[in-house]
Length: 293
Image 1: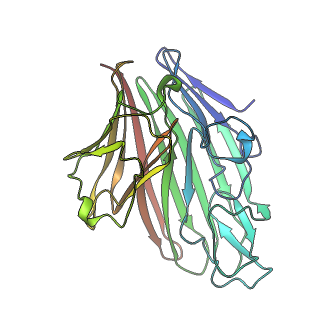
Image 2 (image 1 turned 30 degrees about the vertical axis):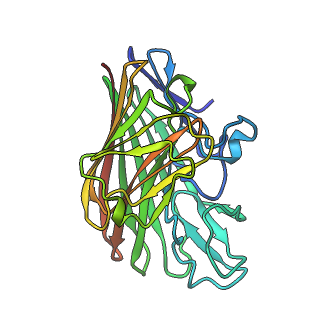
């Protein structure tokens, strides 16, 4: 079932496009559903219970166009618009809602597994002047892995979108709490946040890190952690009791960094803005490292 990349340090489970999650939100190309480091699970599901896991986020799922999907405004009600990495979605309202389940006409997918990588190619239909080809390579490294993206605008209209990875993290299923801290390569500016949700006050903001004085029962959310400035794309999550440090770095500068979490999960999110004229292409990558400390 799906694909497994594995070495002496890591085991990565990658679901095929038409396997497990087939919702209208997250990208179907290279769905990383689980990451295990020396037998310790590093990833969780979006919700606390494990029911209906194939309908929700888990592992490291990425998404294009969380604010507005490609071609949504031009599509007539009952017509189709693009969700990059998924296919066409049927428009049934005046506003695009990322969490809403839409009717899907899937894109065409090709995939190939090698000894140290999985490659998935997503080719869209041409609808309302929009079309694209997305290639994703997930490459296993000695103490981590990299996700390489290649997006080509094959349509007649400009593509303007964003991409991020919703990192659903929880070390060894330990609840979020004092054992955890997440650091960023830039100073935090709470006075510039557009949204702060911390009802219990259990998340503590420091100069460049977020820690926890107790396990939160309610969801927490901060956006954007980098205020109104572009920043180095990166974060480092430390779990003190297990002695594990997990990090992500992007090949791009980010203009938005979010942090969401709950009792069981924490998710730092690095957004990448993409603008492509017809015929243009772009590449970017995300590199994950896992270390014992």
